[in-house]
Length: 152
Image (cartoon, rainbow, N blue to C red; front, side, top):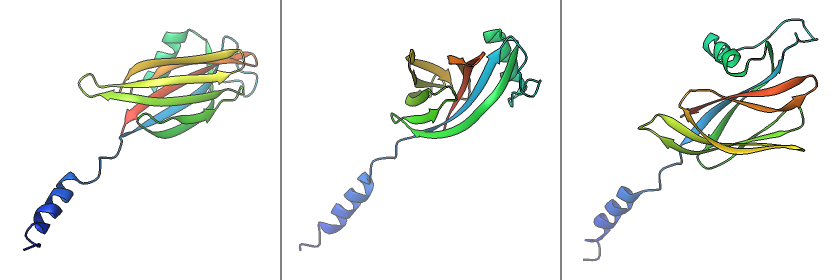
């Protein structure tokens, strides 16, 4: 008699299961040095980006020269924080807050922590779109971050 409830209890446990895993977001960060003067080292602009990204970069920010200083891919769980060290001593902190499938956007909190230069704001970015954020001086250049989030 006591076994009659066992299958029902097992079915209920299996149906409820563990809570679903929190979705993650892949975030590509390109760190660029931007200037109106040609780079002193190498003598040419070096941006490893798709042609549309390079076009958007030059349209949005109006610098004449860009060179890639660093690139990092982060996989960050929703409402968690990924971190990247910047060449000028700053720390970039990226936190995906939500995904809106209807709009195709990812809400992303972007924080850049550096002495005398702090940024802490939230952006809604198209899935696979790129956000450009300046991140303070770097020698004779300005650091520009090209941040591209993609929902996994």
